[in-house]
Image (cartoon, rainbow, N blue to C red; front, top):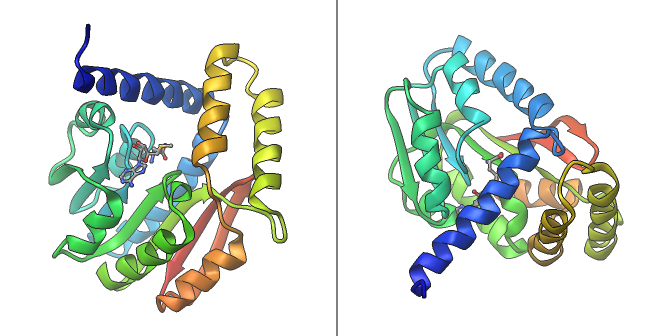
Length: 233
Ligand SMILES: C[S@@+](CC[C@H](N)C(=O)[O-])C[C@H]1O[C@@H](n2cnc3c(N)ncnc32)[C@H](O)[C@@H]1O
Protein backbone atom coordinates (compact mmCIF):
# COMPACT_ATOMS: atom_id res chain seq x y z
CA UNK A 1 0.00 0.00 0.00
CA UNK A 2 1.45 3.43 -0.86
CA UNK A 3 1.66 5.81 2.08
CA UNK A 4 -0.30 9.07 1.98
CA UNK A 5 2.66 11.20 0.84
CA UNK A 6 3.37 8.87 -2.11
CA UNK A 7 -0.32 8.96 -2.98
CA UNK A 8 -0.44 12.76 -3.04
CA UNK A 9 2.70 12.91 -5.16
CA UNK A 10 1.10 10.53 -7.65
CA UNK A 11 -2.06 12.67 -7.83
CA UNK A 12 -0.04 15.86 -8.38
CA UNK A 13 2.05 14.19 -11.07
CA UNK A 14 -1.06 12.81 -12.82
CA UNK A 15 -2.98 16.10 -12.93
CA UNK A 16 0.20 17.96 -13.88
CA UNK A 17 0.81 15.56 -16.80
CA UNK A 18 -2.78 16.09 -17.99
CA UNK A 19 -2.37 19.90 -17.96
CA UNK A 20 0.96 19.56 -19.75
CA UNK A 21 -0.58 17.53 -22.57
CA UNK A 22 -3.53 19.97 -22.86
CA UNK A 23 -1.11 22.89 -23.20
CA UNK A 24 0.98 20.96 -25.72
CA UNK A 25 -2.14 20.57 -27.87
CA UNK A 26 -2.56 24.36 -27.59
CA UNK A 27 -6.15 24.16 -26.38
CA UNK A 28 -5.52 27.16 -24.09
CA UNK A 29 -3.67 29.15 -26.77
CA UNK A 30 -0.26 28.83 -25.08
CA UNK A 31 1.56 29.27 -28.41
CA UNK A 32 -0.13 32.56 -29.34
CA UNK A 33 -0.04 33.88 -25.79
CA UNK A 34 3.58 33.08 -25.05
CA UNK A 35 4.65 34.53 -28.45
CA UNK A 36 3.22 37.79 -27.13
CA UNK A 37 4.95 37.34 -23.77
CA UNK A 38 8.25 36.92 -25.64
CA UNK A 39 7.57 40.18 -27.52
CA UNK A 40 6.63 41.98 -24.31
CA UNK A 41 9.70 40.75 -22.40
CA UNK A 42 11.94 41.53 -25.40
CA UNK A 43 10.70 45.14 -25.34
CA UNK A 44 11.40 45.23 -21.59
CA UNK A 45 14.88 43.72 -22.13
CA UNK A 46 15.66 46.34 -24.81
CA UNK A 47 15.29 49.00 -22.07
CA UNK A 48 17.82 47.21 -19.84
CA UNK A 49 18.26 44.20 -17.58
CA UNK A 50 15.14 43.13 -15.75
CA UNK A 51 14.24 40.72 -12.96
CA UNK A 52 11.12 38.57 -13.09
CA UNK A 53 9.01 36.71 -10.54
CA UNK A 54 6.75 33.98 -11.96
CA UNK A 55 3.76 33.02 -9.79
CA UNK A 56 2.40 29.50 -10.40
CA UNK A 57 5.25 28.83 -12.82
CA UNK A 58 4.41 25.15 -13.30
CA UNK A 59 7.14 23.35 -15.25
CA UNK A 60 8.06 26.63 -17.09
CA UNK A 61 7.76 24.82 -20.43
CA UNK A 62 6.32 27.91 -22.14
CA UNK A 63 8.01 30.76 -20.26
CA UNK A 64 11.49 29.18 -20.52
CA UNK A 65 11.89 29.88 -24.28
CA UNK A 66 10.69 33.48 -23.69
CA UNK A 67 13.40 33.89 -21.05
CA UNK A 68 16.02 32.45 -23.39
CA UNK A 69 15.10 35.12 -25.98
CA UNK A 70 14.67 38.03 -23.56
CA UNK A 71 17.20 37.02 -20.92
CA UNK A 72 16.48 38.44 -17.46
CA UNK A 73 19.09 39.28 -14.82
CA UNK A 74 17.17 37.03 -12.41
CA UNK A 75 14.23 34.61 -12.66
CA UNK A 76 12.33 33.40 -9.61
CA UNK A 77 9.59 30.79 -10.11
CA UNK A 78 7.11 29.79 -7.42
CA UNK A 79 4.75 26.81 -7.45
CA UNK A 80 2.98 24.44 -5.09
CA UNK A 81 3.62 21.38 -7.28
CA UNK A 82 6.93 19.68 -6.61
CA UNK A 83 6.46 17.51 -9.68
CA UNK A 84 6.18 20.62 -11.89
CA UNK A 85 9.20 22.28 -10.24
CA UNK A 86 11.34 19.18 -10.82
CA UNK A 87 10.60 19.47 -14.55
CA UNK A 88 11.16 23.23 -14.44
CA UNK A 89 14.85 22.75 -13.57
CA UNK A 90 15.27 20.96 -16.90
CA UNK A 91 13.39 23.54 -18.99
CA UNK A 92 15.40 26.40 -17.43
CA UNK A 93 18.81 24.80 -18.01
CA UNK A 94 21.22 27.26 -19.59
CA UNK A 95 19.78 30.31 -17.81
CA UNK A 96 21.81 31.98 -15.06
CA UNK A 97 20.41 33.33 -11.78
CA UNK A 98 17.40 31.07 -11.59
CA UNK A 99 15.63 30.21 -8.32
CA UNK A 100 12.62 27.94 -7.87
CA UNK A 101 10.56 27.92 -4.69
CA UNK A 102 8.05 25.32 -3.53
CA UNK A 103 5.69 27.82 -1.90
CA UNK A 104 2.25 29.40 -2.03
CA UNK A 105 2.46 32.28 -4.52
CA UNK A 106 0.59 34.82 -2.37
CA UNK A 107 2.88 34.09 0.57
CA UNK A 108 5.87 34.27 -1.74
CA UNK A 109 5.07 37.81 -2.95
CA UNK A 110 4.07 38.98 0.50
CA UNK A 111 7.26 37.74 2.16
CA UNK A 112 9.96 38.31 -0.45
CA UNK A 113 12.37 41.08 0.41
CA UNK A 114 13.27 41.59 -3.24
CA UNK A 115 11.52 43.81 -5.74
CA UNK A 116 10.99 42.82 -9.37
CA UNK A 117 10.76 44.66 -12.68
CA UNK A 118 8.22 42.12 -13.92
CA UNK A 119 5.81 39.93 -11.99
CA UNK A 120 4.21 37.34 -14.25
CA UNK A 121 1.47 34.80 -13.65
CA UNK A 122 0.08 32.35 -16.22
CA UNK A 123 -3.23 30.53 -15.61
CA UNK A 124 -2.84 30.38 -11.82
CA UNK A 125 -4.64 33.39 -10.29
CA UNK A 126 -8.15 32.15 -11.20
CA UNK A 127 -7.77 29.54 -8.44
CA UNK A 128 -7.89 32.33 -5.84
CA UNK A 129 -11.10 33.75 -4.37
CA UNK A 130 -11.77 37.49 -4.74
CA UNK A 131 -10.13 38.45 -1.43
CA UNK A 132 -6.95 36.53 -2.23
CA UNK A 133 -6.83 38.12 -5.67
CA UNK A 134 -7.14 41.57 -4.07
CA UNK A 135 -4.36 40.66 -1.60
CA UNK A 136 -2.25 39.47 -4.52
CA UNK A 137 -2.66 42.80 -6.35
CA UNK A 138 -1.65 44.67 -3.18
CA UNK A 139 1.38 42.42 -2.67
CA UNK A 140 2.46 42.68 -6.32
CA UNK A 141 2.09 46.46 -6.32
CA UNK A 142 4.30 46.62 -3.20
CA UNK A 143 7.02 44.41 -4.76
CA UNK A 144 7.15 45.96 -8.25
CA UNK A 145 10.23 48.09 -8.92
CA UNK A 146 9.83 51.57 -10.43
CA UNK A 147 8.23 51.22 -13.90
CA UNK A 148 7.47 47.59 -13.07
CA UNK A 149 4.72 45.56 -14.74
CA UNK A 150 2.41 42.84 -13.51
CA UNK A 151 1.60 40.62 -16.49
CA UNK A 152 -1.40 38.40 -15.98
CA UNK A 153 -2.40 35.58 -18.32
CA UNK A 154 -5.69 34.09 -17.25
CA UNK A 155 -9.28 33.21 -18.00
CA UNK A 156 -11.61 36.19 -17.65
CA UNK A 157 -15.43 36.23 -17.38
CA UNK A 158 -17.48 38.43 -19.71
CA UNK A 159 -19.07 41.48 -18.08
CA UNK A 160 -22.36 40.45 -16.46
CA UNK A 161 -21.58 36.75 -16.78
CA UNK A 162 -21.94 34.74 -13.54
CA UNK A 163 -19.34 32.18 -12.49
CA UNK A 164 -21.90 29.42 -13.20
CA UNK A 165 -22.47 30.75 -16.75
CA UNK A 166 -18.70 30.97 -17.30
CA UNK A 167 -18.14 27.40 -16.09
CA UNK A 168 -20.99 26.12 -18.27
CA UNK A 169 -19.51 27.87 -21.31
CA UNK A 170 -15.96 26.72 -20.55
CA UNK A 171 -16.99 23.09 -20.04
CA UNK A 172 -18.85 23.27 -23.36
CA UNK A 173 -15.70 24.73 -25.00
CA UNK A 174 -13.62 21.87 -23.54
CA UNK A 175 -16.07 19.14 -24.52
CA UNK A 176 -16.44 20.40 -28.11
CA UNK A 177 -12.91 21.67 -28.87
CA UNK A 178 -10.52 19.47 -26.86
CA UNK A 179 -11.20 16.56 -29.17
CA UNK A 180 -7.85 14.82 -28.81
CA UNK A 181 -8.11 14.45 -25.02
CA UNK A 182 -9.19 10.91 -24.01
CA UNK A 183 -12.75 10.98 -22.51
CA UNK A 184 -11.71 9.97 -18.95
CA UNK A 185 -8.97 12.64 -18.92
CA UNK A 186 -11.39 15.22 -20.32
CA UNK A 187 -13.85 14.48 -17.52
CA UNK A 188 -11.06 14.84 -14.95
CA UNK A 189 -10.14 18.23 -16.45
CA UNK A 190 -13.81 19.33 -16.48
CA UNK A 191 -14.20 18.37 -12.82
CA UNK A 192 -11.09 20.36 -11.96
CA UNK A 193 -12.43 23.48 -13.74
CA UNK A 194 -15.89 23.15 -12.15
CA UNK A 195 -14.38 22.83 -8.67
CA UNK A 196 -11.41 25.20 -8.72
CA UNK A 197 -11.83 27.95 -11.33
CA UNK A 198 -13.03 31.36 -10.13
CA UNK A 199 -12.25 33.83 -12.92
CA UNK A 200 -13.15 37.51 -12.52
CA UNK A 201 -14.47 39.98 -15.07
CA UNK A 202 -12.04 42.47 -16.61
CA UNK A 203 -13.72 45.34 -14.77
CA UNK A 204 -13.39 43.50 -11.42
CA UNK A 205 -9.69 42.90 -12.08
CA UNK A 206 -9.26 46.59 -13.02
CA UNK A 207 -11.02 47.63 -9.81
CA UNK A 208 -8.78 45.35 -7.70
CA UNK A 209 -5.67 46.65 -9.46
CA UNK A 210 -6.75 50.28 -8.98
CA UNK A 211 -7.31 49.64 -5.25
CA UNK A 212 -3.65 48.57 -5.18
CA UNK A 213 -2.58 51.72 -7.12
CA UNK A 214 -2.01 49.81 -10.37
CA UNK A 215 -4.10 52.22 -12.40
CA UNK A 216 -2.60 51.61 -15.83
CA UNK A 217 -4.27 48.57 -17.33
CA UNK A 218 -3.93 47.17 -20.81
CA UNK A 219 -5.74 44.27 -22.40
CA UNK A 220 -2.90 43.18 -24.66
CA UNK A 221 -4.88 40.45 -26.41
CA UNK A 222 -7.41 37.72 -25.85
CA UNK A 223 -8.06 34.30 -27.34
CA UNK A 224 -11.60 33.28 -26.44
CA UNK A 225 -11.72 33.34 -22.61
CA UNK A 226 -7.91 33.51 -22.31
CA UNK A 227 -6.60 37.05 -21.76
CA UNK A 228 -3.23 38.80 -21.53
CA UNK A 229 -3.44 41.79 -19.17
CA UNK A 230 -0.71 44.23 -18.17
CA UNK A 231 -0.96 46.29 -14.97
CA UNK A 232 1.36 49.09 -13.86
CA UNK A 233 1.29 52.12 -11.55
C1 LIG B 1 -2.53 25.79 -15.00
S1 LIG B 1 -0.92 25.75 -14.34
C2 LIG B 1 -0.09 27.06 -15.21
C3 LIG B 1 1.38 26.80 -15.44
C4 LIG B 1 2.09 27.89 -16.28
N1 LIG B 1 2.19 29.12 -15.54
C5 LIG B 1 1.38 28.11 -17.60
O1 LIG B 1 1.10 29.26 -17.93
O2 LIG B 1 1.16 27.16 -18.33
C6 LIG B 1 -1.21 26.51 -12.78
C7 LIG B 1 -0.04 26.33 -11.82
O3 LIG B 1 -0.28 27.14 -10.66
C8 LIG B 1 0.12 26.38 -9.52
N2 LIG B 1 -0.61 26.94 -8.37
C9 LIG B 1 -1.94 26.98 -8.15
N3 LIG B 1 -2.21 27.60 -7.00
C10 LIG B 1 -1.01 28.01 -6.48
C11 LIG B 1 -0.62 28.72 -5.32
N4 LIG B 1 -1.52 29.15 -4.44
N5 LIG B 1 0.69 28.95 -5.12
C12 LIG B 1 1.62 28.51 -6.01
N6 LIG B 1 1.30 27.82 -7.13
C13 LIG B 1 0.01 27.58 -7.37
C14 LIG B 1 -0.22 24.94 -9.85
O4 LIG B 1 0.55 24.04 -9.10
C15 LIG B 1 0.13 24.90 -11.34
O5 LIG B 1 1.47 24.51 -11.55
